Length: 241
Ligand code: F6R
Image (tube, helix red, strand yellow):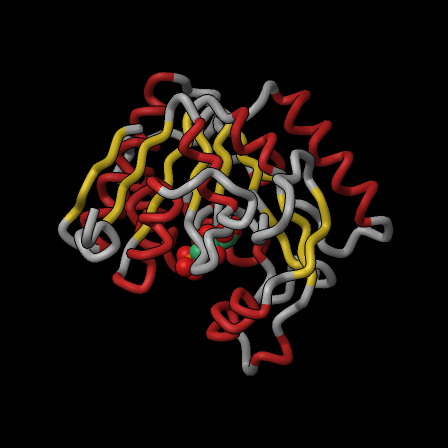
């Protein structure tokens, strides 16, 4: 594991963006695994700047996102497809048809999960997977449980996750209770994983993830076994480490 401490959120975003930059320079047709949430916003802003300055070309890049709420169509501003289009894809030269998220409106969500894994497999797997960290230790929407689930699957979100994500909705009741998430298998098979964490609220869970026992009760703890994990975290999140 490589741990990079940054002075604040902006510094984290810049350093993480540089790692994505390096990946695309090394391999122009990289497959990026992408995430949503507040953690990623600064990083996406940096990537947009690099692209608009002409320093970074996304024309041959493809992407697969970690997750999507069940029941939200792409036009819903709370859907992760909407987030990705508005915060990244619409501002860079990635062909939109090469960007994939699970379809939250699929008539048969289990079938959608199976097809999603097949797609990632057929693309040749993920070169660089971006991850944020949930307050309960989730990665993607792999919530704490009794086992690590390998495949893409449907999940019921934890109360703490619903509460944490309520800030993006009018009220807590509007947060979808279910989502489709990439499983632990795909995440662990990514050739490189970039975990970004900021803020003091995540300090104790980050400590558990990186140095606690490896257990599905703390899903992110599996990352300790990844051969190429880079953690970029600000001082507050790394407090006590
Ligand atoms: C989002 C995702 C989640 C978030 C996590 C942290 O696609 O997969 O695991 O990364 O919930 O969210 P923020 O960054 O909003 O604290």
